Amino acid sequence: MTQTTRLGMLTPSSNTVLEPVTTSMLSDLPDVTAHFSRFKVTEIALSETALGQFDDSEILRAAELLAHAKVDVIAWNGTSASWLGFERDERLCQRIMEATGIAACTSVLAFREIFRARGVENVGLVTPYLFDVQDRIISNWRASGFNCSAERHCGLQDNFSFAGVTELEISDMVRAVSRQGCEAVAIVCTNMRAAPSVAALERELGLPVYDSIATTVWKSLALAGVETGRVQGWGSLFEDLKSM
Image (tube, rainbow, N blue to C red):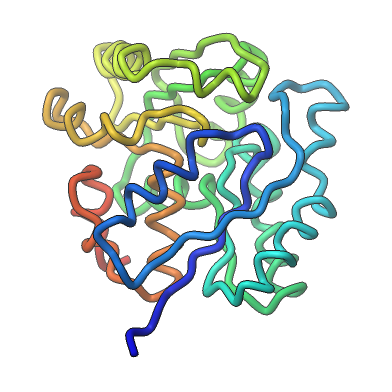
């Protein structure tokens, strides 16, 4: 009987993009399945209410439900640590492992790992977020050694609305930051439909383009012991960093 690898994904409740995109990415891997658990996230802002959505206790409850499915890894498929700080995701991974005994990872920590592996220092940042959230991301990433040398954002707050940003709009933002100068582009949000355009954008621009959903899938596969290079057609991330 074929051994199945199960990837557990923690998902913002109002997200409608990451589940179908993740499933598409894994469609050519019949021995790998993705399973999702939600907790309440409806807006992205710096208000006390919005920040409180990412309290570890809510996320841990969702993680414990994924553990019932005997998943091989649990990933926080969201980008809140970009504005809250990398240490938040480091602590979350530790708490998930302590609570469930299952290895954990996050989209944002995967970005950091990828940047360090590729020697990326100047990043083009693309998000749907408000200006103050974008500014906080830029500050946090700079403190960790990643300079956001160019940025574009949509000025949106309602998490559900992020899925309405079109692939053309996302691609135009990526093109804009590439023209300003950067070593790689980071599309930071797991509720924007960017991943299907990444491979074509990389060919057009000659730059690596990293999407948040893709970074989560990449790290989840690696942590579960699955060869990441088996994912084809979704950009250089899977082609260039197979063995990490």
